[in-house]
Image (cartoon, rainbow, N blue to C red; front, side):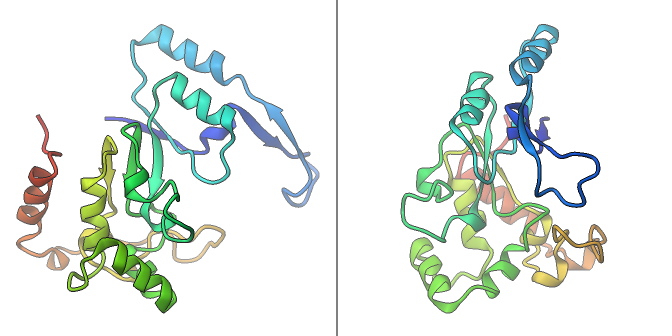
Length: 207
């Protein structure tokens, strides 16, 4: 098991906002005692079973802190297709010290995301995966499992091939979040065998 630390960049510096400010616009960056914290944790145990959420604009000092303590970072496949082939979220650019996600609780479902894209971007994604006859989200699921990333994660909504109506959370909103529940009649009888076969194919089975 591992614990994911949200906003890992806050262990290098955090955005301090005066208490009387109505928004987060006015503030300043304050240096954090990240090294001291992780050294204290290491003094209590030999390894740190942590995942660093290092999404967004990440500076070199944040990368250095993560690597210093051997913490895997995160890559989201839904972020991979808005630039060129050097995009770090593309599977061919992944490294071992990574946890790859098709999407997270803050993203749309992969099917909902794909359906909402403009046609040229959908075509680019289809060309990348070269699976024209395989419906979403399975090309992304397979790509996550085939990635060199240490761990591969996908929301249950993706395994169930669900659309945007089944999204878990929409950041910045207050209505309808964290209410999604699955029903057993949504689970295909062959899903477990399919996932087992894919995990064996990509050498991700336990043991």
